[in-house]
Length: 175
Image 1 (spheres, rainbow, N blue to C red):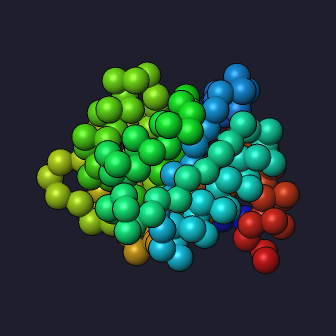
Image 2 (image 1 turned 90 degrees about the vertical axis):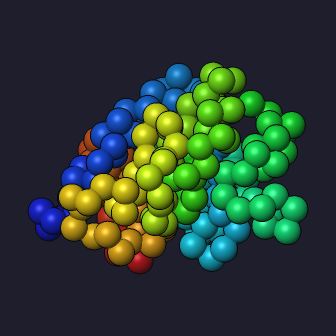
Image 3 (image 1 turned 45 degrees about the vertical axis):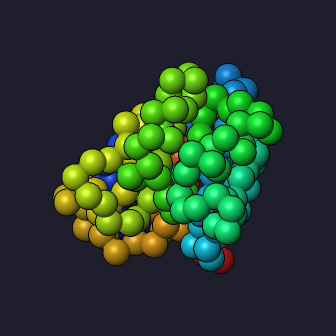
């Protein structure tokens, strides 16, 4: 169903992300989908939350408040969601590539982070389990994906790995 150039597994770190997410679902770990507060981030959060829940994941979500929590996976936002609970896995959508200090804090607490993002970044990037960002890795053909496009690539990869391609395409692609 995918053209070769659109194969989600050509995105760097997607295989590692798929494996970590499926492990979290199988072992019933708590997964937090952390979203940016704009249209792209909110759509990405909703779609990924819905999909992971349909796979049987123990998922909750947190959308940052730009007025009080700054931008991205800020330390303030991390402190706020940690007051609500301590997930085993945080998946960011539409943010996180350069949020080095916050990812480090989560890692120190034993919380894995997978970053899905599409923003440009500088020379330093977060030390997450995986970063899926076509602008970080120059070898992906669709560098202009929005954050929700990156999330859809992750969902397609999860569908392919779980052999749910038909259900995935009917629900998320052929809308």
